[in-house]
Image 1 (cartoon, rainbow, N blue to C red):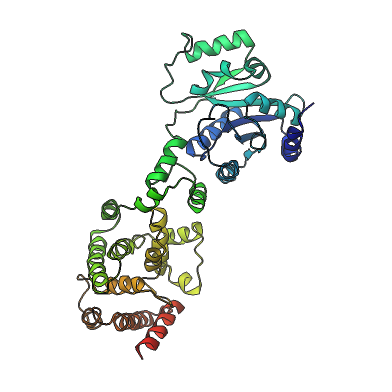
Image 2: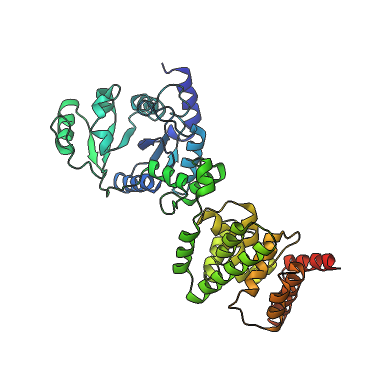
Length: 422
């Protein structure tokens, strides 16, 4: 008879597991789930054609009692986000809801009790784990009741256990335990959750290593951050060099001109110079994306497009720039992000940093010395509000002449500035 908590899991998962005649189970802490896990699951699904590839986040792993893992619910949620886009993949709480350490044999017994009689259950295990499988609890029973699918791991091809290679060890288990062991045809992928956690802590990019939905979840909940990593993750020089490659020479020169002008204005007005130079550096980081990419990113990043933004998608570059600053350059300061977000349109309630970046964008040295620009350069050091109002007037004039609609944010900003100047 199953323990009480196992019957609870059985009821929870009955809605799909009691109809699964073939399962390939991929277990792990998934702290976090990464592209290597998904690649293995895809290979298993393609080659073995199970009814379901079942991701099984562990609760308390008996092999990792010395390491503090992220909470089970967070790991489960990240895994669910990672697999939800794959029709053949699913996820189970069987091990997470188990109050004692998660032994694979307990999971195998539970699945055997839930799934239809005669269901084929296979476990995916990496070479590093497979070579130690005889140390597992009730390993003999596990080898006889379930199939084992071995997964190549980099660096383990020539490892020996009791003088046996992987192939020889497989043959030994087959002969001794009547084990059914299969080799997954997949390239060894050198991706580890440990490295990904370290990259988060150091403020380095994890792009391409984990699904974007999982990255967003990690950042939203601050799962792998430390106080030092949050404060020290943005590197001005690294960001500058990345933009030097990403942007055209003319746009990069403009960007550095805005940095110089923003620093000068911030110094003059007693504002945080470092915030000004970061906001100025990144203000156009999404400027040169294609219109199609801008639209795609707005959808991906859930940036709502009103009628004006729909009509003039190029105007979204400031909104996308703020989001890119957060996602790609690890900027978390809300004042910096706001200054980037509204540098093109302005908005009601503009802070001094917003005003400085917006004015610097139009008064930097490379800008042609037209009548409004020359006047703004002269006025900005003594009256930032008047210089910004002139800028807003010029925006409205340019957009009107071009037949483009004026964004309400710009009108709100100008009306507020006119009120302050009276």
